[in-house]
Length: 252
Length: 90
Ligand SMILES: [Zn+2]
Image 1 (cartoon, rainbow over the protein chains, first blue to last red):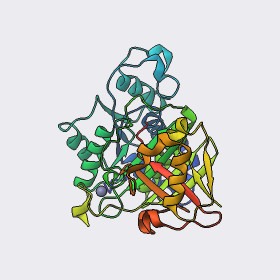
Image 2 (image 1 turned 60 degrees about the vertical axis):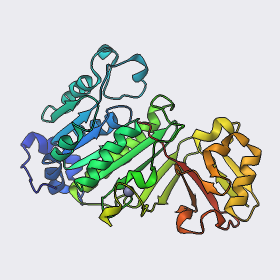
Image 3 (image 1 turned 180 degrees about the horizontal axis):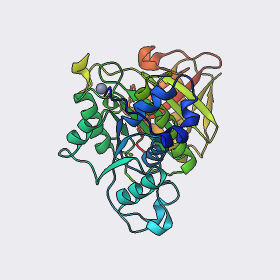
Image 4 (image 1 turned 30 degrees about the horizontal axis):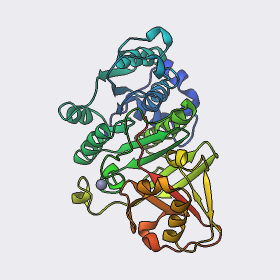
């Protein structure tokens, strides 16, 4: 991670006062956030909410990827979008809102990820966030995280359930250790979404990003935090790497 | 009695029942009982009769059974079993 610790302007000191007040985060943590770049795959109910919270918390730069145009059925959960943006490119709509929240934020946008664009985007970032509804994109992010030895926060949801975990290549299981191939039962539109569920996973994931960047708090390495809002049940599961994993086994 | 918590992804096949109580004293016996009650979930759980699908991790009291005794893991009074399927909703 970069050692850059840019100084805050007096405006920023006022905006982030209540965060800086948190004793284990402080001014140093806020400066680290300002100096950091996070790459988030997709700006849907999950990734968009993570981006929104990081923008509000004072992250310096976000790289966001999401293709296609905004549709009505996106509005129940994509917190960065509004009805007057229907038809607009999703990524552009997300950037517009992020800059309203934080005009000092640098936002780099790209459409869908592929083998060509992912490595360079990951290289640009200090930390990756995997929030795609498509396993193929999740595996691309995972592969780059492992190759470039970058921390990746992985979050996913299904209806009222979801999970968050932190992948630290060489120290924790990677995504492929947990899901070696795309399950037959999965398709991009197969899952129901309540925004209350996607934003809950997003809150844990965004907090995880801030804790890693500012180096404080307890993080979700080798753990999966799993919730079910149907029964209000929350679990903190111990997860193990797969010694035969085709992506990360060489790191151990 | 142990409880198996049924994830949302399976609940259309379990008449929306979110939890299943079992007196079986091994994980494999409990899972077979679960499948007997809700046959449509068999293909989500098992690759063969004695091998789990690779997209499923099972936790007993929050520990992956791969680190315990796998499908032979014993179940005791008040044990909690979580079935965690690979999901990618974003
Ligand atoms: Zn792995």
